[in-house]
View: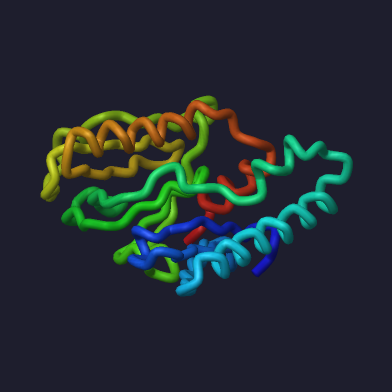
Length: 200
């Protein structure tokens, strides 16, 4: 695991165990999930803090002279939002399938099962300055949803279509997407965006 991409977050509800920890890192620019657990909560807190300490040391070397106020927020992060939605494929003619979604900064990942090691796919969510928008509802010609509350994410290359089970879910997902879209992109995020555009 390369320290520059590693993250750790406590996930007791998702893992179904009180001291469950989810560790992620990038492997070939795809997110890899590792789920760990220990009966002793202190043991898991120690591992979490060890990961944060290693990240802190890495960031001190990578960004010499940066104040702690800039480095500390980069140690570990919680996900912006997680939960179930339905999605369809790029042609918008396939039936919608229920998937578990994780919004990790600008990466929207979807999984068949919340505890899968790898996402089935990832969508890069850029900024409004770069022509990314989120809209309620779905195009009028789209069929095959089981859930009634649609969301359309417009990117420079295509539209991604999702459906939520409840109006509340739709509102919460749209708010999460809007937070990311409203934030200007950092220089290093352009390289990530370019990778997603040219990914097979």
